[in-house]
Image (cartoon, rainbow, N blue to C red; front, side, top):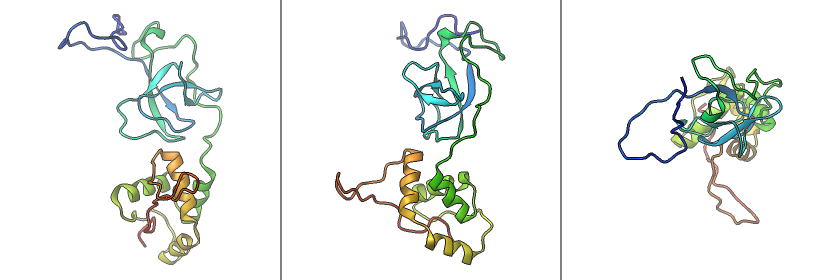
Length: 192
């Protein structure tokens, strides 16, 4: 059964009171960058988007932002669910899978193809480089020579700019407001 007393979103009456609730959750796909805890709704394609009056909240326990195309748990508003068991319904929302393919960032998709990796592998490699301050291990099938040529031919500034937009990571601006110059990683994305 659902949280009959609707405790969430209200101030507790006293400190130290313990309780437990069932919460209705549904797995959805992000249509754009969504930060954990953001109020969300579904667009016409049944993808999750930030929405001030949305039907739920993006999983607040996620450690990183949810990027376009990623699946995540949407915690639904407790007052809108008529009954909760392990199988449930929402009176106004159809949670069937999205009706369109995910629209991945075209620059990053092209860059991933040139490197011989998947879009997800490129996103993970960028996060690795930023988090570890080192080139990422190469998961693709290109030879060392082919990979080195692909990296030499790539526009790393475009890749890092687009990755920062998709991931929500902000690089330091070492330029000015009118002429920004971002402090992108200087070493190659993959170890050769």
